[in-house]
Image 1 (tube, rainbow, N blue to C red):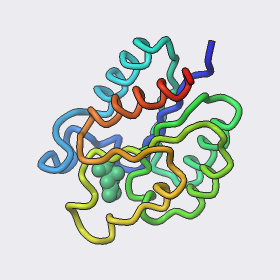
Image 2: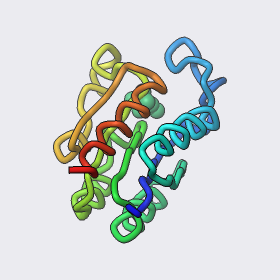
Image 3: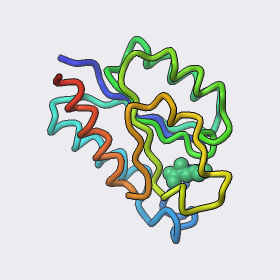
Image 4: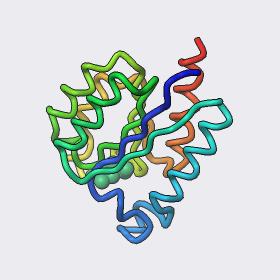
Length: 146
Ligand code: DQA
């Protein structure tokens, strides 16, 4: 049995559903958690699902994934654009990393166009809402089978 896939969500994603619905839609983080769990199940994979508003806690979650996860899906939210600490932590992983953003960060303010994470991610998906998490899971599962 493969280790679980860890899904790590960054700041303000706990507010999904009511946060800027014109950008992020009305899907809640609990909805996304349920979608991810169901999708992973179709691949016979277990899930760890996390959210934190704290940069250091996200670093700790990534460090835990080194031993505990077979792959990581991460939406580091605003920290994607600012955090070298999160990049450094992700660089210590040997498991595949999928970067997800609900919105199309390239169609938004220029400060969102660069993500520190993208340079080390196996794949990057943005602009597809919650479906992006499902696609990331499918892509991870395919790589874990290889
Ligand atoms: C986000 C995009 C980021 O620019 C933003 O700071 C977020 C969410 C997304 O999922 O579209 O909080 O990562």
